[in-house]
Image 1: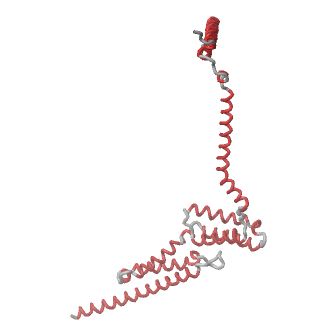
Image 2 (image 1 turned 135 degrees about the vertical axis):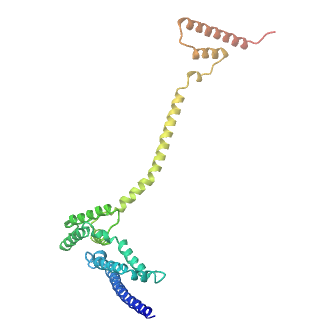
Image 3 (image 1 turned 30 degrees about the horizontal axis):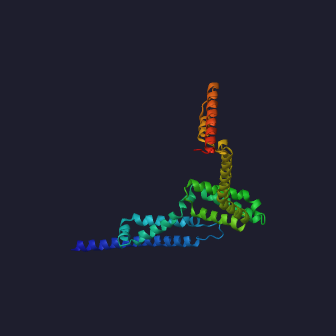
Length: 289
């Protein structure tokens, strides 16, 4: 009985010690989480724009939060206590939400290959040039702007669009300042030229249609006139008799003539003509009974 009581007392002491350690670790984690949330909110809109962005300004808070969470999860009793104590695992869920915020901003990309510092230096160089050349920013600082813009585009292509939020925000603000505020990008199209182009493209099909119709009509009229001019002379004077029709048909359809064939045809024509005259005379004389 005495040993059992001692075992219970020892268990209570161990539990109290573990609970105290877990509470301390949990308190440290909660403090770091709250500081990280406050830092994100504070750096959502950086002023001035080229300094203290979300990823750069909250990097230390994020690392400290991850460290305290790992320390809490390394203690077996603490991990079981806080992961299984409630149905939604508040500690685990809260930590994942804050990590997702960091990952969604692609903050890890800011610190690869010193890209963030290089980009920030180029941005500071452009800002200094703009401040030193009031009134002539476009001509005096175009080289600095092109350097910054080319660096960003190359990095964006290399990362497949997964750009660090800090650099995205700085580049967007710089482009708005350069194009909209300073009006250094002269890309406006004149309204007159635009309207003329629209009218030309809209009226081109109509012009082509009517032009083609006029050309076809002229061509048909020309072909019709040519056919009328090519009518054979036989059409001008209709034949006077059946003999004439036969003679005309023979003339029209005869093959290449030989002298003998020509003489035979002329003989047939004279014979047909004489017969026609005899018929006419017989028709002209009244019959006497």
